[in-house]
Length: 361
Image 1 (cartoon, rainbow, N blue to C red):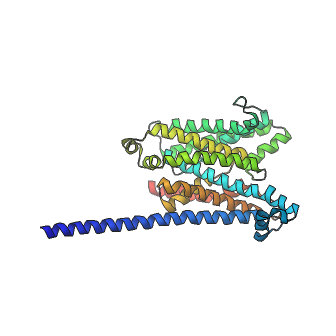
Image 2 (cartoon, helix red, strand yellow; image 1 turned 90 degrees about the horizontal axis):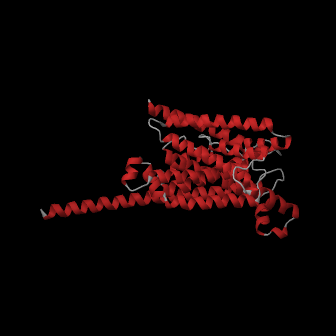
């Protein structure tokens, strides 16, 4: 009897040892994915800075960054004032949109959710257009940030509408997608109205938002966008276990002590801030918030400790790479980055719909 007990104990300990080793291997693989994405982002940013009509090499870029006084002043302007802000803005905006999409998919339990597909980006874009065309500020005394303030308010209203609609009985994932399509059409129509009423100068600004472009990136804008990302990421990271529990369903999350309603509302506000800031600076960028989280989910799973930073890095790499592509299609011409992301995202979106369709059947 004692021998049987000893064998059982050894068997249990051996199983625990194998489980610990397997968990350690999985964890190391996830860390390797993060390191790989970080390295890819550094490489992509470097290539983005060096690419363009001036024909700079990576050696020229590195020299200008490390020893700016040793190079020609023209080189300094090209690298520090033009290309560096565009490259860094692509990385920051890509990370912001991917994080926003990841958290929207989490709290709404909807794999097709993102600021673009659910109309939040379109709402933020309309808010910005309202400021440019009519000079209307929905937040009094917003000052120089009235464009971003308008974008944030309309993005928040769209988010709250989605949240309220998702609480109705019988609302499915497919219904939420249809709601997002309806919001996209609504705010696209309102945007078209603004374009019709706009002056020639205001019309150029509105078209800039609709196409999406990094051409007007600057260091102050990067600072604001990065500050918003760094302000929201710590909150998300402090909620990782609650957000992970939410993927198990509302009832199980509540049984674990999660205040589901408050969590959803807080996350929607943070997501709206990320989407509004990104749209107000670079315009409407589609599908980054959809593709980035799905790439991260395929590589590291649903654990928010790894899923969230991987989504941010995947989105940053995606938009940074897209920025390089936008300079390479037509030599000397900077193609709007929103066009490239849509061309990349539409096939992915269609494939995702087909996968969901097979699952339903």
